[in-house]
Length: 187
Image 1 (spheres, one colour):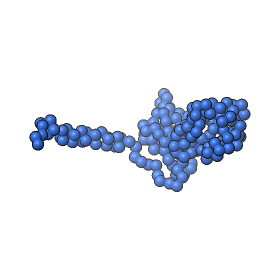
Image 2 (cartoon, one colour; image 1 turned 60 degrees about the horizontal axis):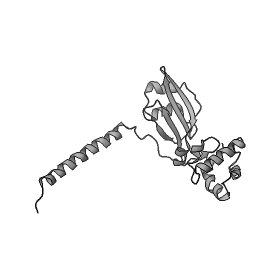
Image 3 (cartoon, one colour; image 1 turned 180 degrees about the vertical axis):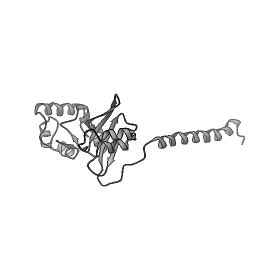
């Protein structure tokens, strides 16, 4: 059987492509922050966003989680981390999203709630009184129509007082409530 000249060049070209792919993928590993999230039974997740080198969700084993500790995980420089100690010193609760902003050389932080999609992915309950209609669709079995019904009833009641109040929403019965109960919370 005769092999063509073209087939003889395929092997080295594929090998070169594999080497380039390996170099490209290792660059992402080298540039990424070291995995500083410790292994623990019930990690506390906090999200960093804004003016940080590596935004994302970070796990901590113990409270209190402070802004400076979160910044150190994101690869922020030491000057930025030291400025964080002068910021809001209240501990960061699990499920908090912190947006760091550097404006005119000054570090500022804004606390928000992590979005429902991230919370569910991390096994955290969704605070139904605090999330948007779109975020309610992150809950299994809750489509856009049911999410609008939940938001409308929440507005009429000025917020739900317990998970049982979800039964007043048209489209939620006892079976749906039992399925949603471990996934939601009423802050």
